[in-house]
Length: 435
Image 1 (tube, rainbow, N blue to C red):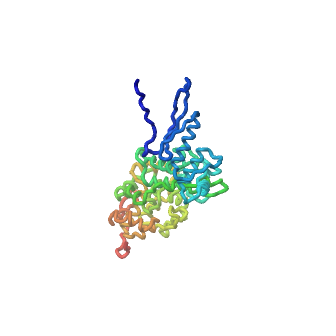
Image 2: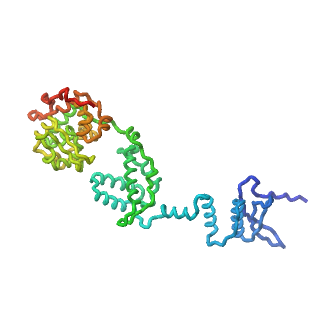
Image 3: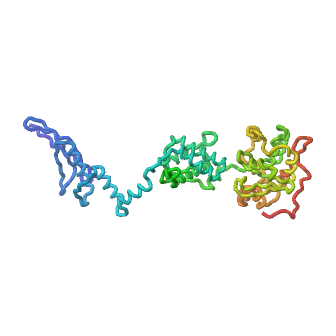
């Protein structure tokens, strides 16, 4: 008669992590087969133990409790009547372990509810944006800035399914910023664009956190943008293109074209942009605002152009000296307004035809002014920049001769072209200012 092979016990070894198992176990008694459930895998007094249950649910409950008991070996265990479920009890034990002796569970819950609970009033990003921009408009934000902020927040809402304000996380913001693209639609957006979008979104969430009964705020209790990286000024500058300026030869060609284009209607526009450094014409630019008050702020008698703070991008008053060549252009085309009607499309065509870069007119004015007069301070005053900005970006871009040629370009009305005047005086040596 063959000998029955001894069954090997399936249990955890001495070095294994706690793992209590439940397995069905069948046996025969008086010709009847029975099935029970065997719980095994723990030690008591150094010996392996097991327990048999007829009901599978009771076996699993016992196994779970025994596993907790084994893991918490050394702790004082007690039986407590509680309305908590088994799962809730285990969560409470885990929470106490995480908190240690630093905070009580009650303190942790109170802090969480005060800072992270869903607000009583919620709103989607697009609806919140409307109220946010209404407030900014009442505070006096420029229309151009309002449009920019609206565009950034609308793009954020659309790209993320217009979520509720309190549902936005840091990961959502970071993903959105990483997906920003340059004008070609393929290349990643530049660091300056990343910072701009990041800051606009952050300002919205700071506002959404502020308490305000009229808008039922706060809508969230944390700003998800605060932990999102921001590029430094040096990192942004690494991607900034070189300052574009127009050479005196190219400028003569441009103004010769302008004198013949549509009867010279755009001459004053470009003359003030190039020879006075007025910020170029857009819907709410310095040049556009100045055009509405030309007689009040452009004084040919005193030779000064006054840019009040309400017109200025920097919100500071400044005066620009009318050079002899600028006076010649303004007097020759005084019958035309600074900004012609329906200027958008023609102006865009001119810029495209001559490949004029962003702010090229203003960059030209500052760099040639410094080259001719050798005065960083005077250039800064007239341009409305800081001296450090002028010294860093515009110093020594051109020679004194190029500066003289730039400010010598005048109209020849008979020939209908721009020429270099020999009557524009050079600054006397004694008038030069130290840098």
